[in-house]
Amino acid sequence: MFSLPDMGGVAETMWVGFLAVSVFFSFAMGVLCLLGVSYIKNGWLNLTAAQGLWRSSLVVWIFSVIGGVLGAAVLALGAASAARDGAAPGVATALCFLATILPAAMCGAAWTTVVQRIRW
Image (tube, rainbow, N blue to C red; front, side, top):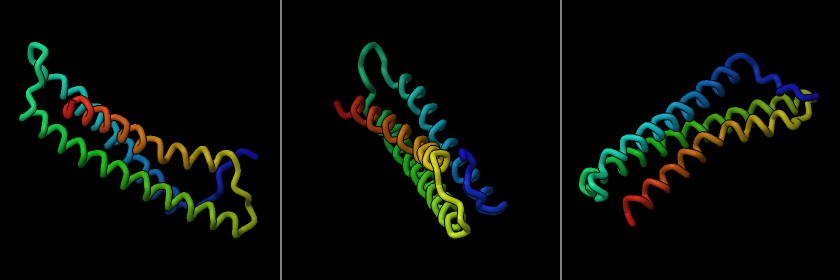
């Protein structure tokens, strides 16, 4: 009842790979957010140096979204293939979609927080 659709070896490997890319870049966003603290000296933000952080965090977020979208596409194709063979997508498939998109969403939330801190 709570089993995932059988996508096949290559599709599962691709899904896990894209999910790993998205998680890696989300982790990199966390590291960039921690590095951003070093741009604050005596209560003042070094805006010139922080612009580089803003740009690099945008690139990291874009790559996280790319990994999440490709992972969700592979999972959707695998679920559609399993549904064609007679398996009904269930709660586990929906949770896997959520787990695939969640790193990119968290990375986007961190990016918007960084932008708000730099811009205001």
